[in-house]
Image (tube, rainbow, N blue to C red; front, side):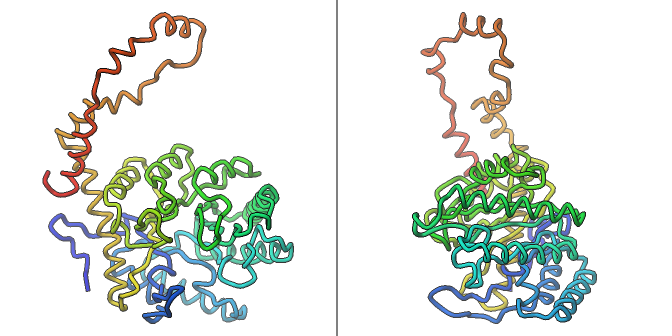
Length: 394
């Protein structure tokens, strides 16, 4: 089994790196829609201990990942007390919590956006109980992935009504957190499709627009995921950059994904290495203080040892790419190429705030398009330097 022992560059994860894993990730038994489980489901407490040994910072979880839905109140309290004890012993934290509003047949038509009012009420009540659990375990962020919030038959739901009900649920749950004085923020996780044919709030852009309509928009941000933007052919790097620009990156899900495939949840960095590099560079340079959360799972071909190879690999790849980002910042040739491409000039104001005087001056001297068009930006050279860096020739 692979162990992260530092390697040549001393790349050993520590709690300061804030690497976290969902209980459902390392606990994934390898089942898929075409085949049954290939490995035993892990006890959450064993997962916490093993992740702590590997250098992780914490865990995240759905309500049902920890407490089976059929548990009595006494059983629930016993399960939670046991996890608390394990967290205290290992120094691990719960960095994020969420609700499973997609697994049970009751959610086959949606949860917050089901056509059945009774289902919608049940979904909100289940989420309230799960928020209580997350708050009890100290989770500062609560994520909402609307896995069943969508349609296959377009005639089955009026989108405006569905968005009204989605907003109603979010506003109500914000009120619940405020009323209970929980130190918790919400994060919406967009996804374009799967398991529904078309999902409401499918991309970062849709979710950002939706947040602006909420009663408490300051409480709600995003939890973008690599696979979810990538599977629809979008750039995850640019999605995260815009989320940061809006001040809405409350949490992030890291994994690997091939464009156009089903949601693969592959080991972080195992696909799209250049995209992963620029994402890590962005996170490290942006001042983002949240966890680096891995929402992925080991290949179905793996046994229990392979699960920990997977977890160790997620963290190691992030650390390798972080080291490459530091090299990027100090490489003289790359610095010169950035200058030649006028990269820093984009940060300079173009015209400043409008005034009649500025408009008159610009109209009098707009520049010569023929002369401006003659310059080259040498982006080929710059991009090749990035490739040289990533492939180890610099």
